[in-house]
Amino acid sequence: MRLAAQAKGGFYPTPPRVLDLLTTLLRPPARRPAGSHGTVRLLDPCCGAGAALAHLASRLHPYSALPLETYGVELHQERSTQATTRLEHTLATDLFAAAIANRAFGLLLLNPPYDHDGEQKRTEHRFLLHCTRYLAEHGVLVFIVPRRRLPVSARFLAAHYRRLACWAFPSPERAAFDQVVLTGCRRARAQPDPAAEQQVHRWAEEELRELTPAPTPLYTVPATPAGELLFSTRTVDPLAAAAEARRTGLWTHATVTDALWPPETPRPRPLLPLRRGHLAMLVAAGFLDNLCLEANGQRLLVKGRTAKELVLVERTRAQETRRERLRTTVVALDLTTGAITDIAA
Image (cartoon, rainbow, N blue to C red; front, side):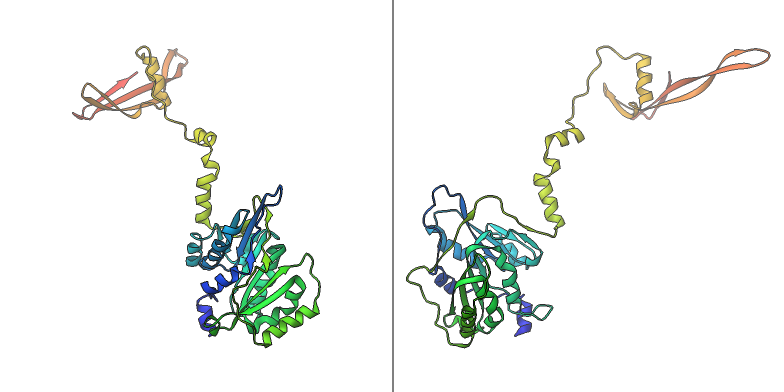
């Protein structure tokens, strides 16, 4: 059984019928408080393909007076790709390598992997410890685990959550892992509650009532302040970073692109024909190096060269005086006939 769980990453999606029953326990804010600019945010830190949270959000959205947003984290690449089509915000990363704002979410839907971690501790409890920080005060926890795993988290649940309640999965969904749905509201400040802790232990030992439609919702999912939210990964995907740079990076600014790649301007024509001195300057500057000229059906390949040479200026019986001067030479190759013309300036 454990090898099969590891092969699928400990992923056991919540059945749709269980999700439908869960929605009868929850309600979003039905009225917008005066001057409120809040958002109802739902988080699934083990979202798989995103179907569970999207299903839950679709049932809650019509009753919410405030905007409702979905957030999911999934390590498995294929499932995370599917989640992007269902949820508004997704991270394809290990949850413990993600940077997520604390106390920013009104609902935590936590169906963690069922296994041991590298330190031989239960992963269900490790995820609960880590994810509680994301819930706002009075935020609602929906914790889906095998019933026999409840005692591991009993003390923590009792200290950090109030109004705890627990139901067994309905049949036949409960047959595979004897899963339960435990709900509660996050306390403003953690405090020991021995009575609640003992109750969690009893739920693990006693036969629980099955989850059925609630006549009235038991929990109101609170809103949190609207605005930008920290929800990113601490690791960098090179392909994603390159795509983001192309979309919003430095190269999108016109001042940068115009400076590096200025738009082409038409070549100006001189007002008068160039003289020999002008041509010599062009050759010296390299403008006539391997230049192809076309006119009246003739095509010439022109190469210019400027070199220094010593010229005799004065000769006496005692000495000769020579000075350097620049000598410009232009060689033209007729591309039609192959004739070469050497033009000295």
